[in-house]
Length: 395
Image (cartoon, rainbow, N blue to C red; front, side, top):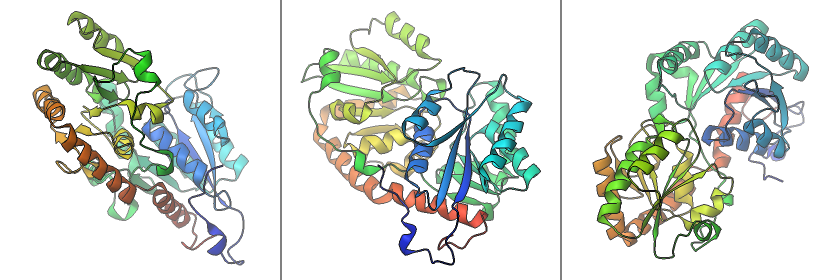
């Protein structure tokens, strides 16, 4: 059972007592990625007597649903599947309208372009407020760039926008009115993270020796995550240093491209493609360094996780990363796309392991202080209360 982040019993008077705020939480992505875990963590830890979250998962045309839906059900959450056959399926709107009525929803909450679109249409038709969270945008293709621009236009009509970082808020610019936008940073359920360094199953099953340095890149294998500069740096570093191993955790459209690069440069013995793992909380204890090489980020959960596990971090200074990593104090920031800068930073790590370990320990303390999940949920509930027409003290 989760420890609820909101404990209303001491705050809500008898006159305020009543049914909880019901939120229809709409998400299009199939992945249990950073945004997905953030959404599900909040749904799981909000006290159900205060807010009732209905997780609505677009099925992407998959008969058995998505990994995101499966994880929501595994956690025991209230889940509704939204069926679709194509990208802009008008029947999606009909299903959302029916779900609002079925659950007597007070608020719709959207998280991406298509849920912003269908959520806005449903909200306007039914006279309900729409809260939209901006986790960041992926614009690798002309279609992606177009949907990003259209999404920014749609956001102007949301009742309220939640941005996951100050930098994401800045990128919204004119598309978000100051009085309708709140920055609520991603946060983790910190009680789940326990640093206990040592050799474990991942190292032993992959033939990684105790003295070898394991350097990890964690995230979807996709252009915006910048894994190619990571591998380009790895190629140079393998010529300069002995005892290095590199691992990429994740799957995605760039996997074949990245595997081809590794094969072409005869790096197969030093580079591991580990796929998507559900046991990262254990594997972090076996990793020596996390490298985030992204070109764009909202608020990177991987960096929060790594620091909570006291794993040193080298990261590109994009999105909300600089709001987590204090350069030279809790980690190292480098420009995106510059594999030479990455080579130098990783070489510094190899030569100065103790310095980086000190930064990681400071990073854990800083994340515990500034990125607590309970505070995130409290701020989210405050937004819900405001748009349900309720005082902040309780319903």
